[in-house]
Image 1 (cartoon, rainbow, N blue to C red):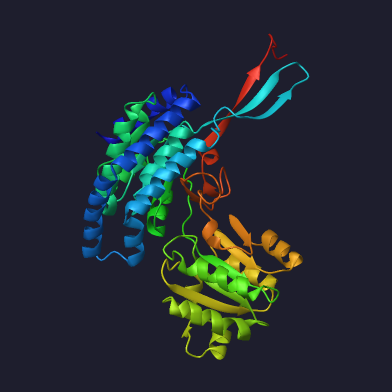
Image 2: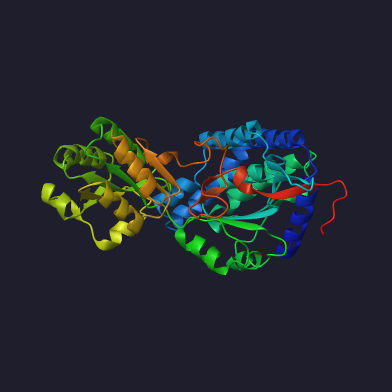
Length: 414
């Protein structure tokens, strides 16, 4: 099927889906979840083909990690779909009501966006997550995965579409681009007559390509250069646990810590212990001159390091004098994704929350929580560092717009 026909069918499906009741959408999601679990052996078998090709092609450890599916990750996929069932359907929510002096009653009502295209790389779980989120929020979805996960994505799509065919949700709302050619992406990005929104998920190169070539609005984040600042007023034990988790728990994730900033007053006490813990976990440390004076065996950080998203067990460390320097540093080098402060001082944390211009800002918690599931949004379509329409983890509400429903009794404008 060509891309244009796919988009036209998705539009027709979206218009039909708008009339489907919540309970029927939820039944469809339950059927999809059950089918994923029943078909887990098939999914894992097909995924193994992608992993093998990826290893032979020299994909990084981070990409192989994102690509790999085992029974535990399939179970997480299933749970993600079932969690979306439990969430309130945002469609039809009356956001605001007001009555005009002429008697008109105006309701601002949440509605689906329409047709959403998801363009993604080595993340086969996105196929299930985004299909479920779009269906629950009343949207049709066009899924375009990367060549490195084509067997996995195809297997998941086949299972989902077969389950969907037995429900009252129109099958046309779920479209899957089988071509791995970049030309298919180029064609899709020009279909603004049929597609309402594009969400790219992958590396910075893919996201920039989509943003620069699309005639359709794009929700995006280019990269996750996430910081944790350990204040002089921090609980250092708590700071160790937060920093270790933010860096080591899953370094390939976009919400992993890439830079650690440490106040000069506690650097001599905190850094040797923290660096030892991180190195024991395989982390390479790069530091500024102040860090290297304290720990001469640390690799020298260069200017490029402060902008870099490693997605690996590499961490750049800087010693700072106060929270104002931290705010200025993050706003210069960060990516407006997720940044954290560890402190027991309310005034300092308030300054950080107000001053750091990021989608998610944390006090005494790991940046690894920037995730739709962890925020209670079910799964997520993606993370946005934009400021219009949606920011941060994008769940069901992020997949809606609104319309004004106006009720009159014969009013005419004079």
